[in-house]
Length: 328
Picture 1: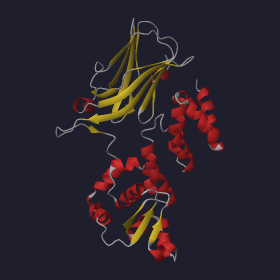
Picture 2 (picture 1 turned 180 degrees about the vertical axis):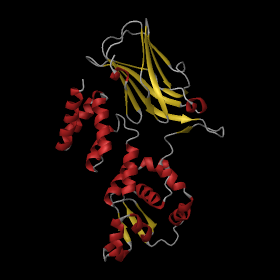
Picture 3 (picture 1 turned 60 degrees about the vertical axis):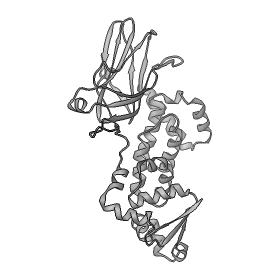
Picture 4 (picture 1 turned 90 degrees about the vertical axis):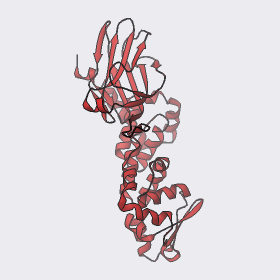
C-alpha cells in the first residue's frame, strides 16, 4: 500500500480522500489532516455495509475543547458519470471519538471513489457557558478593531470629531480626516500633498463604491471594523485596497477570500485573483476546481465563464488540468 493511499488532501475547509480500491471485509484509516485547530481522521470499514467515519485525533485539545462541527460529507464514484452519495447536512455536532459520526452506506461501491468533506463551521464551547464560538469568526481585522489604542481613533470617525474631508460615494457622503487617510494610503497622501481637486475642494469622489462599502473601508482604516462588515464587503474592499495602495487591507482580503471558497463563488474569486494579482487565491481556486473535481459540479457556469475569461487565465486553468492528469 502506497503512502498516498492514506493521504487526505485539504484546502482551508475542504478535505478529500481518494480511494483506489477497497477490498471486501477491509478497514482503512487515513493519515491525520489539519482543518481548523484540530487534526482529523477519516476511516472506512467495508463488510456488508460500508461505514464511513469522521473524527478528531485524540489529544489534550480534543479532550478539553472538542470541536463542534457543521459539515457536508459525500462519497463520489470517480469513474463514469461520477455518481455521488450525500449525507444530510450535519449541524453543530460535537465530535470526540470515532463513534460520534458514523455513516452507513448500504449501496455497494466498486472501483475508485472519493470521500469529500466540506466543513461549514467549527465551533468550541464558550468558557463562560454561553453559546459556542466559531473559530472562524475571529480574524485579524476584528482583533485590530478591538485594540485599545484604536478606540479614540474610531470615535473620531463615528462621532465625526473635527472631520476635514468629505467622501462622496455612489449613494451618499461621509466625513473623514485627511491626516488619517494620508497616513494609511500613499494615494490619499499624494492627493493632499499636491494642488489637486481633492485638496482644493476638500472632497474625494469614490463613485465606484456604495456608501456602505465606503463606510467599511473607513472603519478598517480607523481600526474599528466589525468582522461581519468586513465579510460583507470583501470584494469592494479588495478593489479599494488595490486602487488606494493599502497593502495590509489587500492582504487581509486575500487571506479571508481563501477561507470559504465554494462552488457558488469560486469562479468570481478566480477572476478577481487574476485581476488583482492574488497568487494564493488563484492557485486555490484552480486547485478546488480541478484537483478536487468541483469543475464537474458547475459545468454550465464554467462553460459560460470560459466564454468571457481572460485568455491568459484560461491557459493557466488548462495547465492545471494537464498537471493534475499527470498525477494520476
